[in-house]
Structure formats: structure tokens, C-alpha cells
Image 1 (cartoon, rainbow, N blue to C red):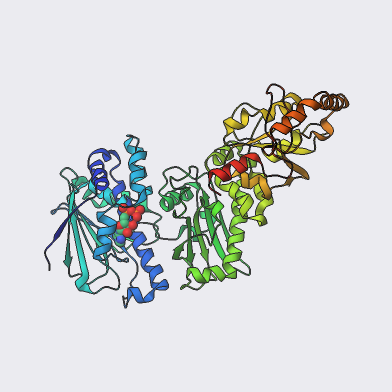
Image 2 (cartoon, rainbow, N blue to C red):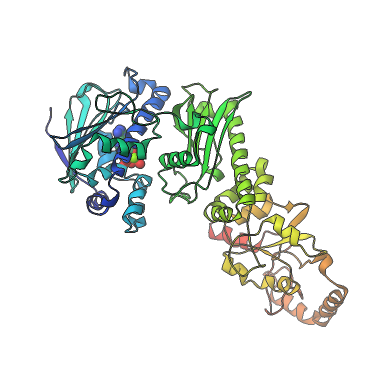
Length: 553
Ligand code: ADP
Ligand code: MG
């Protein structure tokens, strides 16, 4: 056995530890949920590693996965042990000592001061381990990484005040054991009945057995929820499983659970969350769908199971057709995976469509949270463009609010007699759109215009989405103002008259702006502004050009 080395926590870790010890007490039981969930992750990781990199776990015996919760009344300790993947010395330092994760700073920023809410945020931001310090004055973690010799066991200990110690120990069995030396006054946790009820409340859906004391019968259900028949499951079951999967503390907005049999056999349980995660726009952020093969966790999706524009979806895909040693490379060329992916996309889009039809209020919430992501699909996924188009919602000139509540279907249904185009305006923001002079004539004629203020809208309208129900999408900032059938005779005559009246002025302006403007025209598109700039008919929309310049393209 070697000398212990002492390290200091990073500033942020110390801040979080301090918070655990002093501010999250009202929801203290969650520490057990977090430690059990880490144990469960460690077991899943061992399994997936065993298949993906068998050499790295060496000749570890395959034991039945197990999470053990025990207590010692006399010593005042609580122990959570797993036979999962364990950690090497470096992993202990990286994963437990430093909190280098992006989530940490984000977590501190998100805190509200409401203890209950803040405690629920812990798991989501990857600081769950530290919740042990809510009830413990000292934590001792002993671990050995699968594949390493018994002599490479590691013991980590800390009182959570600023420093931690790491030393080498012998440890025959792989996995991790965490001993919590409880604070004074926490004796009530040293009680079998109390612990069982916490486990059942927070960890019932952990798919590995959680056992207590000498009793080998699991305290939890210990079964894969998605493999159970729908008829046995209540909404409550689905919701709590969602919380377990995601660490989200709000209920999901919608979910779909289906078992498919036929050429390929698979089960899907997919959830649409009600709130966007803090890292929705972080490109490398973890995806929410987990792939299982016959119940065994294989890997987290990195885009094979669902496309990027559905990255907010969480859930499980369990396939009966893939080999257990499937790797990402194999997934890419697999017909079974292609099939699953396209069916998963269809199910999610159908789920959203039903939500929009049956619960428009909920769908509006969804759109606020995820509309920007979903829109990417219009450009990225031509195969599902039609279904996606029905799901789009826009702000329009019909109301003064910035609520995006107009579907293309609504728009077309309200089109004026003789109107044959769907008019839209792209602008750097919704406020800029609403104030644009391009709208004046349309307002005057009572023609609705869709207002597009997000960067992703460029890709929606320029190229990808050219028409809907046979109606062309037309930018109001492009080309000659064209009201088509909506122009009446008197207006046409007035326009011709104006052209000849102002011919001399137009000539002068054209000469003056030579090389800067293609053309100078008299227009009927304005009612109060004296002039505006429009893009040529064939040219890219002005807003798009500006955005491209801004982004250095
Ligand atoms: P998260 O679980 O969200 O990553 P935690 O603070 O709960 O955040 O855990 C931090 C990290 O410590 C985990 O990602 C994992 O690498 C490691 N870890 C924690 N508990 C265990 C365990 N029982 N076995 C193996 N590794 C663990
Ligand atoms: Mg965790």
C-alpha cells in the first residue's frame, strides 16, 4: 500500500460541494438516486465495453450485474457497491476530482435558490456524485477498473471541503464501492425500511437488480420497462422511466412505445421532452437515444438512430437483429439500422402531428422549445420533408404578437381570393421583420405575410421548401412586387402613369447609382416609406446575403 497523495478540487467543484453540504438539504434522499444511477451506468459501460473492446476488459469473469446497498448502524456508514466497469487512478482523478465538464458552470448559473428544483438539476448537469456530501461528512470510494490487476485498485476519500486524497490499494473484485460516513443526525438513513422506500421511489426502473443486506431479492423491479407490454404500464410508469433516463425533472410532453415484428424485430420507446436541455445547440452534446440489443445496453446514439434535427428525442431502441458486438462502424452499414432509423423518424413525426392536432397548446410549447431544431430537417431530410412541412409554425402579420402559431395549412386556408402565392419575409429578427417597409403594401391590401426571423429560416425557404399545396413561396423582398391576380385595373393604370411621370427622375437616379443598383423603379409596394431596397428576382434574398457576409461565407 502506498502513501496517499492529496489534491485540491477545482474552484467550481469546491463551490458545488459547498452547495451540496449547505443548500440542498430539503431533498437530501436524491443522493441515493444519483449513486445508484452511477452504479447502473458503470454496469452498462462494462457490458458495452465487453462487446466493443473485449481486450480492454481482459479476462474479467462475467458475473451477474448487481448493485448493493448496505448500512452499518454502529459505524454510521452507508455503502453503495457495484460490479461495473470501475475506474483507473487517472479516471478517478478526471471524473471525481475535477469537474471539467461543460455542465458545471452551467449548473451554477442555472441555480434558482429553490432547493427542491436545484436538487433536481444535479443529475442533469453531471454533478450527481457530489450529492453524496448532502448527507456524508466524509466519502470513501474504492474502485478497480475492469481489466487492470488487483494491485491497481484506487481509494479516493474526501470530506468535501477543498481537498481529496488518492492512494493505491489492493482490490480483487472489479467495480466500485462507495462508503458514506454520515453526518451527525442522519441516523434515520441507517434503516432498512427507509432505504428500501427511497430505492423504490427513485430507482425502481434501474434495469439491474438493486439488493440490500443478505437478501438477494431485488428491491426494485429490475426489468427493462420497454420490454413489458404496454397494457401493464401506466402513464406514471412511463414518466418516471423518462426521468430516470434523462435526469429531467419535468414530465415529457409526449411518448410513443411500439414493438415492431416482421422482417426486422425491434422495440422503441421514444420521448419528446417538454423543455430544451441546456446543451441543445452544443454540437457534440450527448444524444438521448440508447441502443440495446436484446435488452443489453450497447451504445448511446451519435446520429445513427435519429437524425440531428430530432436530437432532442430521448428513449430506447432495442433490436433483436443486431449482433451483441455491434460497433458504430457496423451500425453505419446495417440495413436493420436504416430500417429502424426511418421508422423511428416516422413515429416521432407522427407523434408530433397528433400532438399538434389534438393538443395545439402543448404543440405550441413544443415549437417554442424545439421548433428551431426541427426546421433543420426541412433542408436535411428530403425524404420526410412533406411531413415536416406540416409541422412548421410561423409568426405572421395576421397578429401583432411574435407567437409562431401559423401553419402553412392555416395560411393557405385564409388566402385572399386571387392570391396564388405564399408570401414571406426573411429578416435578421422578428422585430426587424415586423418593421420592414416591404410589408406596407401587403398590409394595405390585407395580405398575410409570414415573418421569418431565425438564421435557420434561410435554409427552410431558400431552396428546400419552394411550394406548399401547389402554392409557390415568394419573398416579399425579392423581385418586382407581384400581387398577381390581386392587382386591379386602376392600380395597373396608376403604375403605368407613375412610370412615365417619373421617367426623368428615374433616369437621374439610375445614373447616380450606376454600379451600385441594378435598377431603380417606381413601386406600389410602399405606403409610408419613401424607398426600399429589393433583391433582383433571380438573386438571393437580401437577408441571406447579409447573413452569409456576417458568417464570413
Ligand atoms: P454523471 O453521472 O452525470 O457523469 P456524476 O457526478 O454522477 O456525473 O459522476 C461523474 C463521473 O464519475 C461519471 O461520469 C463516471 O465517469 C464516474 N463514476 C461515478 N460513479 C461511478 C461508479 N460507480 N463506477 C464507475 N465510474 C463512476
Ligand atoms: Mg451520475
